[in-house]
Every structure is written in structure tokens, then in C-alpha cells.
Length: 165
Image (cartoon, rainbow, N blue to C red; front, side, top):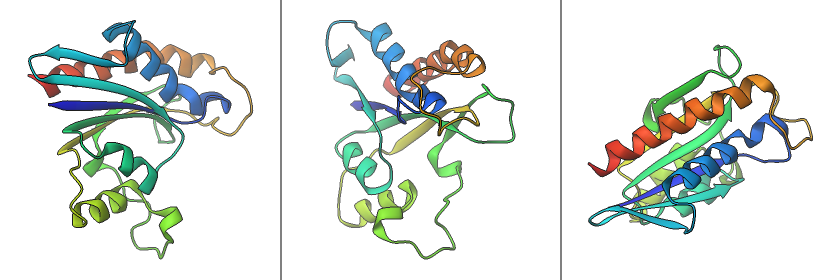
């Protein structure tokens, strides 16, 4: 069984880089010396850092059984809140709109990939940290979002345990 952990965002846009920071911490906790982590018999975990979505992200998910996506996002919750949910429970922001392939949502990209026969994860979980500062050029996180990193890291590690047992 193969699981992919993806830190999403842009590390030079302030809080938008929180997905990368959390994925770095997950990678450090799993195994500090390699890129692919055998946890148990036939279970492998890979960690990537990406600044893309839609079709590009879908292509990175091909060949994995499970995926955990970690990202910053806006919600009604307090800044620094950590949310864990299934991708299928998240809104499909391109639903009810005409969009080009450059604007495809991940949900639409996954449906497209499935129709083309791509082997895509059966289970995709999302770990999100609420923020409102994703477009300011800086390489640090705000204090509220930085405080969420250990909590979100633990959530991602807990999801990994569920995916391999």
C-alpha cells in the first residue's frame, strides 16, 4: 500500500506556506534520512511539497492508494484552526461554473483522471489550517498559524496510522 503526503502552498507567501511546513515536520518525524518511508510490511509513505492544484495535483496522485493533502485555507473558523476532512466532503468550487482545464478543481480533475483509467487514491484526506494571509510576500508564518503546525502535524500522523492499519 502506498500513501502520499502532500504539503500544498507557496512558502514565500506567508501563511500559504503552512502546508509545506507541516509536511516537512511529518517527514522529519517519519524518518529523517530518506524520501520514502516503509512503515510496515508493504506500506510506503512518500512526502512531497507542491505549489499546484487541479490537473497537476491529480497527476502526482496517480499510483497511490491513499493521500493526505495539507494546505492553508479560509473558513469561518478562527485563524490557526485545524480542520480534518475527506476531500469528497469539501465543496467543489468549480461546480456550477464553466471553467477551463487550467481552472479545474481537484475533484473535477480526479473524476477526469478516473474516466481515463488512472489509478488514483481511494481515500484522500485534507488537513487544513485556517488563515487569512496567503498573499503577502514573506517566508514566515503568523503566530496563530505557526501555533497550529504541531496540531496539524499530529493530525496528519494520526491519519497515516489509520491508512496503514
